[in-house]
Structure formats: structure tokens, C-alpha cells
Image 1 (tube, helix red, strand yellow):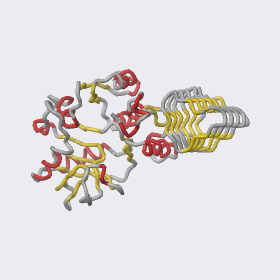
Image 2 (cartoon, rainbow, N blue to C red; image 1 turned 120 degrees about the horizontal axis):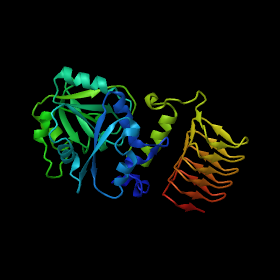
Image 3 (cartoon, rainbow, N blue to C red; image 1 turned 30 degrees about the vertical axis):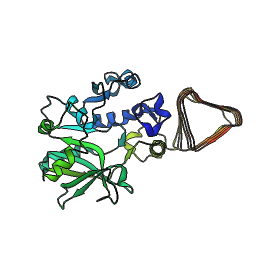
Image 4 (cartoon, rainbow, N blue to C red; image 1 turned 120 degrees about the vertical axis):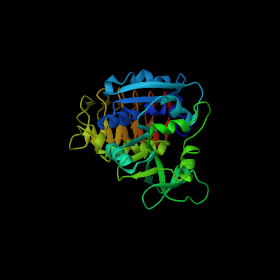
Length: 335
């Protein structure tokens, strides 16, 4: 339900929120494709809002990948979703959270999974605050001996479940698709306690879990700055991508900045990166935008200031208004 991303998630499913003007989930899907994975099933709960995902991605042809859809009428958690989507599968398969962006070497993870003879491999990342993640404790051979979801008190380690898992198909027999259950709370801890072959895969790569306004803004800024090179093809050396945008000769733009083809920056407008500006968005004369993400169809009127903020589609910032450190919902008008 993306409650921590409200009000942005009131009208746009989290996985379709734009990161550099592309749906967030498109980065994960194209990255999977780059590692030879050409068939993906999206597990969804059936709601009118979530149906936008299928309307946007279709069968995956535009992304060069085949997409199937597995629907739940009521949420069944990660365990129920995997059991339903993967029923009858007889080969190893990846499960990925749809709200991460990473340049993880998936091919290397798959290779190590098989070399270790693992039933399950979990991509692990060290974080400063593990309290909102699943936390793993490793033996000397990188096998997970203890797993606890969102630990209370002092976490047993700073290595967290980073949302990429590789399952052997035999584990499907241990999942229940008839009730709500979470593999992070049931299957993973049980496998670890039983001494089963769970491999904790670590790699120094870019990774971000987009669950809050802060991490959403950070993901855009990171990719603008080139932190995840695999997703930044075709960027010019000056860090400003504005081909097709209508930019007045007296407008100033500092990198890194992305302006969609149908956006415009009028005379005397100031755009200070990191900034991502969506389609049909207009920066009027003398207006200033800095450190922000503007979705499609936004108007920043004459003399207005937008700084370190996220503005959803259709927002109108009226003349001389100032927005700083804010998240503004779809079609809002700021006086």
C-alpha cells in the first residue's frame, strides 16, 4: 500500500513512480534482462490502482522481456505470493522486491548459489540502521545461521535482506499459498534454525530500497549523479540531458539535470541539479527549481521557488510561492 509514500501513492502505485522519468520497476526489469532473464511474473493484489501496472507495462515487449501477472484478491504476503506465482515451477528462480534499484551482478549471484549447493540464497547488504529490515547472522562460510525480521532492541548484525532471493524449486513444497504468510518471518528463520543450506550473498554494488519520501528523492539524486552506471547510458559529459526540451537562451541549468523532451524552461529560469523534470512541465520566467523531482505536467510559475522537494503530476506552483523540503500531491495548487 506504500503508506510511507503517501500522498504520492494515493494515485500512483509505488512501482510506477518515476525515477529519472521512468517507472521505478523498469530499472529492475531491464537489469534482469541484461543478465539473461527474459521471463518475469509480477505478483499483484487486484485493485484499480494496481491495475495501472499492467496498463503501463503490458506484456513487456517495450522492455524486451516477457511479463506475466499473478493476482491475489486479498494480500497473502511474500510467502503466499511466491507460492501462487511459482506453482508448478521446476527450476531455480529469482524473487525480487519491486521497489529496489540495484546494479547487483545477478549472474555472479546465481553462479555462487549453485557453487555453494544452496537451497536458498539471499542478497545481503550492510546498513547503518537494520531495524526496519530482516537481519541475517552468518557463519564463517557465509551461510546464514540466524535470521530475524525487523528485530527489536539491538540487531544481531548489520547485514540485511536486500530483496533479491534465489530459490531452489523444492522450497515451494514448504510454502502455503492459502493464507497470509511472510517468508521473512516463517520460512527464512525456520531454514536457518534447522541448519539448512541458506547462502548469504554479499557484493559491493549500488542498492537502494525505495520506501520513504527520503529514499525516493535519494534514488533520483543518486542516478542523476551516476551512482548506478548500468542505468545511466547515453548521458552527456556535462551531466545535463535536455534534448528536445524547450530551454530559453537566458535560462540557467547546472548539472546533474534531466529535462523531458516536452518540458520547458523560460527566460531567466534557474535549474540547479540534481533535478529531474517530467514531460509537459513548465518552469516559467524567473522561477527556480533545485534538488527536486518534478513529475509530468507541473507548472512552476513566474518567480516561484522549489527546493529539495517532490511534486507529483499536475501540481501548480503559483507566482512567487516557495516550496522547500516538501512532498506535494497530484494536482495540488500552491498559492
